[in-house]
Length: 274
Image (cartoon, rainbow, N blue to C red; front, side, top):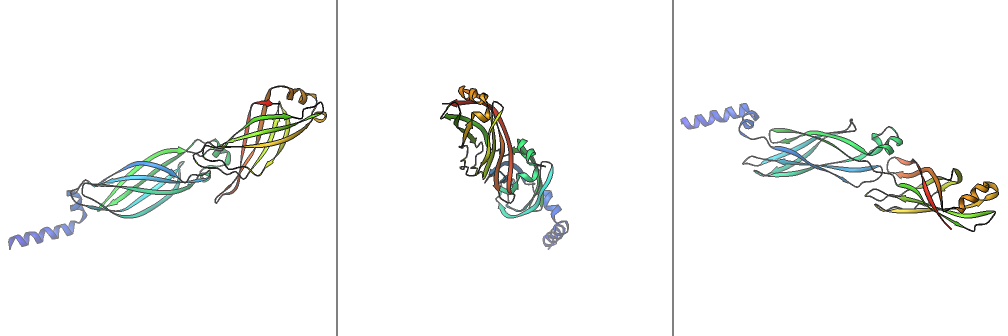
């Protein structure tokens, strides 16, 4: 009889004290940041997948109810939400939880030029995991690289039909994709100058797609008239190379953002083939 009264009193006390009693005798689960993966990348957007490991140190199972998160990008609030989970954590076991988020890079820069001039995006992720009666906080920060525009250069100048009055020239514009994803340019406007003299300007609309870490070449045919350009153009083409300046805009059709133009400028030395 006395035992039954004692058990009843203990039960009543546990009901009255609720979670406080449980938390006194149960160890808090742990949560740790395991890493960040970047998937489905493109020039304008990509998927960020944050991986969190949740560990249950107790001799009985527990339930991961939810994971809340607050993500800041470049010191700006981006996303804040709660992911419902309902995952069973075995006694003494752990489970990996993924927080997938899609971002548009251009939203975090004041202008296209800021985007071009940036090397990385800084993130700050915080939140908590609801496990049993506990809410376990977590926090991590870091950065990841910004996708890069293709590298542009004048690869070669081929000279043919050379005479005292003119020559046929083909300028080969080389485009190299430095990213680990394919790029499809919708157009390229260009201006080409050799030894400070503008030779051609125009728009290439049929640019071949570039595979990841791949490249493509745009060939620009030019008919040079030495009567219009002067004797200096004749003397320049007689040489084996010259200084060049190549500038213009790359055009991309981006999801959600539409048509976007990115300026470029490159100078260097280019060889002539006769």
